[in-house]
Length: 362
Figure 1 (cartoon, helix red, strand yellow):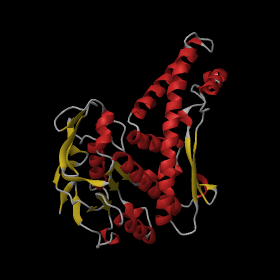
Figure 2 (figure 1 turned 30 degrees about the horizontal axis):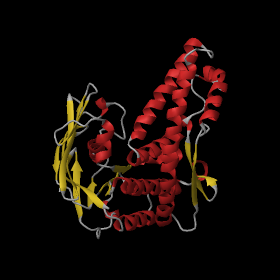
Figure 3 (figure 1 turned 180 degrees about the vertical axis):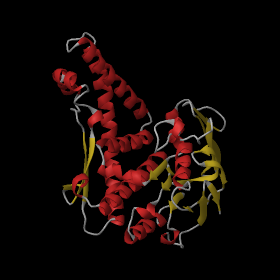
């Protein structure tokens, strides 16, 4: 498995980054600075360039620098000696413009799967501490690389669920088109569940391996995929029909992949309810390491890893364990910190940068 490598980065008008041009190191890139100087903005710009979306904002206008109408991020990527250019243009009005070597990709899924990237930030703790939505998103993100069509299945399922709910609320539980919408819900829902089940097996296996390296010794990890609906089509149809009155009252479908979860346990107890802060951080990092490994095997390349403010989220022992783990891997890493002294100086190919008021310097 060969690593991906960003060889050039150009950022224009992303949050407080008015103009940033840099040639990163092939292995470890350490960006340090005080809080509020633009470290996370740089990680966000990298993520946007690789995926076309932000991991922090739902609306484009939040990413575009205040006072600007447009923003852009451009990358040159080396994939096993073959170079390509990817770029994302963002308009404050909400439009996105995606290009791969100057050409517009057929779909955003093609663009998003071209250069796999995994991000860990303080907000990532919601993966184990927050709602099931974050864990479903993780499974869907992994499934995208195993089977790119899964992204279409998720979108088709979501549309079918919305239309079924509209039919229930506007025309009642005996609406003539309900069976047709429920047939689509079942067809796409079963496909989504199958993709998530396959993704969960790989993710959980890789998480166990990483958790053994990163977490405290003697702490056992286990997990399982928990679908909300029957996996068998006839049983799913029957359950949907039976839930119609309840779904009218509650205003949403009570069963289906939109309510799935990835159950995580530490020492046989639910991690979301019983894990300490340090255990949550170690578990999230292990899940991210698993995402890195599973996507890498599916895509045949080593994804790029983005670590935002990692030194504030781990104690000294866990930080050393993390970097020992990363040093044994191959791949490009960008990490930000307010405490560069906590990052091991012996990291192979380490390149340091400082950021002040949105300006990046060696």
